[in-house]
Image (cartoon, rainbow over all chains, first blue to last red; front, side, top):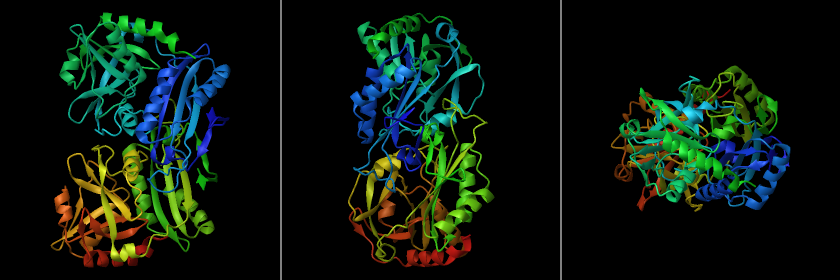
Length: 273
Length: 273
C-alpha cells in the first residue's frame, strides 16, 4: 500500500475521505505486471475529481506509483482512492486542502469460471437508489446505498443484486453496470440521476459503435429487463457476466454477451502500462 | 484523539468508514470538563448504528473514554465517529467485523455572539437533497451533499445555507435543523426522506410539549418558510440561531426563538457527565 506515494496503510482520522466520504476511487486488475485499462481508469478518475471540485493528482505521478506497485504485485486488484485531503472543520472545502491519494492491492478474486460462460443468478434488491444529479455517475466514497443493498442477502448462490430507483427504473447492479440485448439492439440504463458509470460500461458502448450495433441509453423498467433476449453485467474486475436467472425468469443462451466479452477480453492488452 | 480507546490519530486505509462512508458520527460541546447533552448523543449514536446494522460500542466504555478526554480537554468540540470497521473486500458487511470508534477534540468555535441575539443571514442552496428513506434522519458518514452545498458560497457574511429536496420541500440547513414559528405554532420539516434529525431538534420538540406550544412535523414549502413569523436553526454546536435574512426577506424580532434558546441553555447542565 502507498499513502501519498509513501509505503503505509494508515490515514489521518481528520481526512475528509473518512469524515464525509469526500473523495473518489477506482478498482482494476493487474495481471503479469500489466494494469488493465489504466488509461481509461485514470481518465475517469480525473473526470470524477473534477465533478467534485477535487484537484486530481498528476496522472504521470500516479502512473509512476502504479508502476512501482506492479513490480512488487504483478497480479492483483488495484484500488486507488483520492480524497479531498485533511479537513479544516466543517463541510465547506478549503482551496488550500491537499488531496490524499491511496493505493491498495489485494489478491485477485477466484470467481467460479462458469459465471462468464453459463451466467449468474441475480436478485432484485429491496433498497431503492436515490436520485442525485450532482453525484450520479461518479464513483465517489458515499456508498452506503451499495452497502445496505449488498447486506440484504448472504446467499452465495446469488452473484449480484439489481438496484432500481424510487421511480421503478432499473439502474445497475450493486457493483456492476447492466446491459440488455433485445432484437439486435443493446440498451443500458440512463445514469444521469443515479448509479456509477463504469469504465467497462464505456467500453461496451464503444464496442456497439465499432460493430454497428444500435445502443440506447435510457430509462428501463423491470418488465423490459425481464423480457430482454439477453442480460449481462459488467465491471472492471468481473469483466462481463451474463445473467441466467432473475425473478423466476431464466436465460440459457447469450450469443451477444459472449461475442462482446470475447472482443473486450481481446482488447485488454491495449490499455496496459 | 483516541482510536479504539488508544491515543492515536490514524486509521487503516481499509476501514469501511473511508472506503464507503460506512459509519455514523456525533459532535457536541464540552465546557469546563462537562460534555453537553452526552446522554442524548449516546442514544442517537445507538439509534443510528442500529439503523445501519453496526454494533454500537458499549456506551459505558464510550463514556469512560469521554471522561478521560475531558480531563485533558475540558473545553472543546468533541467528535465521535463509529465505523463498521475494517473491511473484507466488497460492499457486503461481514458479521465478524469489529466496529472502529474514534474520538477527536478540536477548539470551541468563536462564532460572533450577535448571531444568537440578532440572527443570521441565510442563503438558499442550489443543490437539492436526494430522498432516501433508508438513510434519512441518520447522521452517517455519506455527507457529499452537505459538502457540495457548503462549497457553493464562501461569503463569510452568510452563516448557513438552507437545503431543499428535489420536490421543493425545505428540509434543513447544511449543518442544522430548521424551525418555523407561525401564529403561535412551531413547525419543523419532516425528515423521513432526507436530512439529519439532530439532538437539538429533539430538544425543541420536547420543549414544545413541555410548554404546550403546538408543533407540527410535516412537509414545508419555501413560500411558507419565507412567510413565517420567525425562523431559527439549531444544532449541538451553535445552539440556536434565529434567521434575520433569507431570500430578500428580513426578520428583526424573535421572541419565541429567544424564549426557546433561553430555556434550552438553562437545561444544558442536566445532560452533562
